[in-house]
Image (tube, rainbow, N blue to C red; front, side):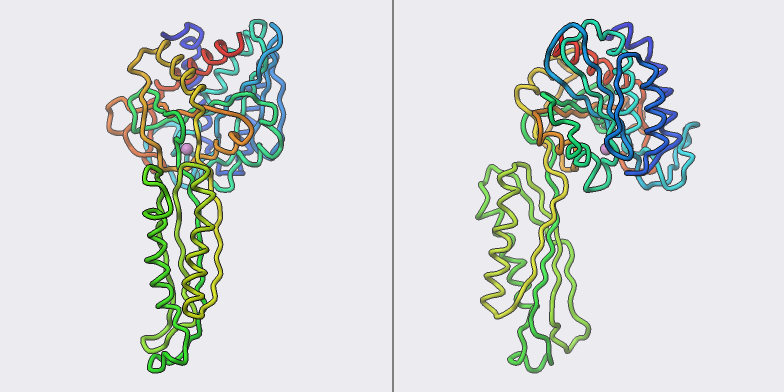
Length: 388
Ligand code: NI
């Protein structure tokens, strides 16, 4: 079960989370949060701090028991553009900024883990890198900025947790392989030749071409992607036209795709453009096509998933780990996985009280803080297991 050390600092973990909660800051603007983290981390001997990006901070702890792997633990630290409407005494003092996704809890758990592990530097073989990452909520995101700054270049394994109001307190949910979807955006412009609705023969009607494109794009998932491979192509915006009797000159189509595997994600833009081009060629229209990548999918390494879930089960019991379905929301933890294998899991914060069941990204979001000690214990056990 819990180590006495973790329980001894439980209240401190909660207090720190509340301090962050009160001063919620938006993505890329987490200046107070970063300062506060630096001032706390500086109190723990053995940690070397660095700040490769404007906000966010990295703390590195080199074990003095010998050589070993480098493992990274990541917490995100940003809030959302929401004005809080809960009645907690530590509600955000900043209108238009609220920790409505629980990242304050992520930072607090990691800070407490850093404190405990720093006090055991003598027994660790290798390095632990604590990543307090900014701007998870706003693409292109803080993770890719840190990854490009080299934060995970020499890391062997990376781990992260996300608190989750949809799961019971203290239960971890994850899965090997694809955990979150990649969400990308596409924009198509069909360029025809407008004119009088009575004389279509003098026009290239982009409406008709767009209609065929919309229908044909739906064949991608059914005909070009394997049936066992999840993918979604959704057309969500379409605009054209100015009057009932004018054939417009162009049609704009915008939508999003969701995929899990890297291969399927990489395949989609080419297949989509081939269809758009084919339809436009057939009717003498022109086109513009763009595909913008959002966050990639988080792909859990099967071996690390086995190790991490084993640690969770042996510390808290079999029923504290659940294999869950892939999650549709994006998560920029995936950027770090460009450099090393990793494991990411949800940690439940729902104790049955309806106020803790409010979904994330909501002005009434609340967290059962008794879940935080599970995250601290997990990080603590994991590092001890990997660096001993
Ligand atoms: Ni989040």
